[in-house]
Image (cartoon, rainbow, N blue to C red; front, side, top):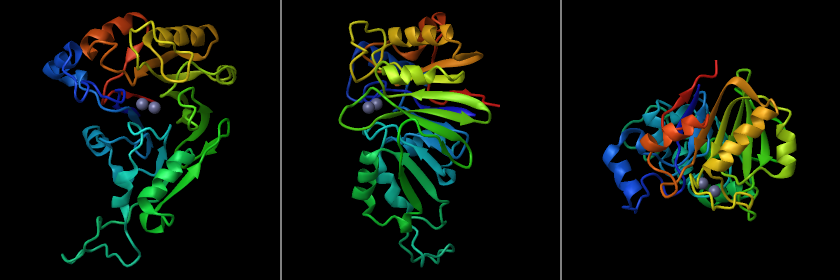
Length: 288
Ligand SMILES: [Zn+2]
Ligand SMILES: [Zn+2]
């Protein structure tokens, strides 16, 4: 199962401090119109991104964070990566698993080892929170490089360069899970030429693409940054024309901001008529 834990852009939907028409309607209507920072779960042991509301998002979707063993981080922007929570994993060797009531430990069960895959900025941010010895936290950080294939217990993945922020290596991920191929492209502007060429060898069962700027067609998607729904539609067509999508492929749009698209209830039917699925928090795509 692929689970969307969050589907909004940085400011969330409704925007945390915004009271515009879209944000007001989203608050009023609730349900799928309320969307938190973009992140996802592949099965029950792998997360893509780890934002500020991750415990609430995981619990809402029935994902148990203590079971998570793999974390793929796209980039270190704060809406995707909130390493502060890692400090609560501290379980030193002398810690007892049967608390007597006087311990201070933040947890009383030793968590399974967590491997965090990400860029240099991700590694540095973990060191800022935990120092340089992670052993009491039962985790490791592996810096990843584009085009290389990595394998975990549950899946394989290939980081590809995103067109997002020149200040750090931002990644999108191609994921092979239970014989299915997934493209997770958030955050990113339009694919770089080498990425576009590389993608042609795949045939995806699920494409997740960001649409931060919604229906705003004056936004330049070719610059490093974000995409809009028009670019999502163009990508969908390009992939169809190049036989890169399975017949039953779900082409889902995530990371949408409240100021260039209406709330879910209004925007989703429009995207649907374009062959695109507007993702919502808690949406699941069956991968079996
Ligand atoms: Zn973002
Ligand atoms: Zn970003």
